Image 1 (cartoon, one colour):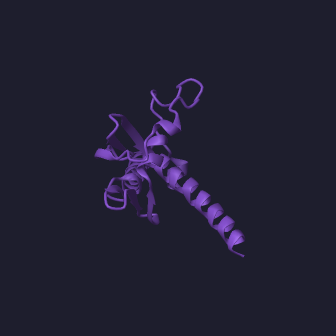
Image 2 (cartoon, rainbow, N blue to C red):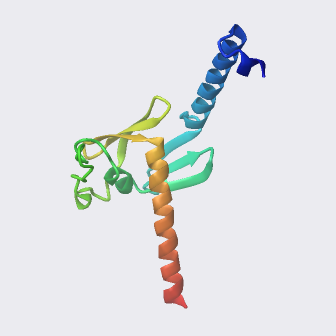
Length: 145
């Protein structure tokens, strides 16, 4: 009640600063590289993704490479994909991966390309793959019946 009645008071200013700090810290925790981890499993040839919000998931390096949204892969003004998906080899693999701030991972690929993947984009790709896998499993069940 006091803050509502006196929004420009020093006490209100202190509460606003405190609220901003809490929001900032929550964002750091939610999107920090420590809670979102992506590694390359060379033996299985999979990108392993672990996220505090979900179980560990995986995507092929080629699928992640094909999902690159940089200006060389996607037309900036229209969003039309320039990269021909079939031009990405199934053997492509990450050479160097490193976090970029608290929101993305930078990947240098074996085909010489450089990509930047916001964590939100990787989560979306994993969800799309999960839905595709579920449809594939349903089709298999129908065939096996």
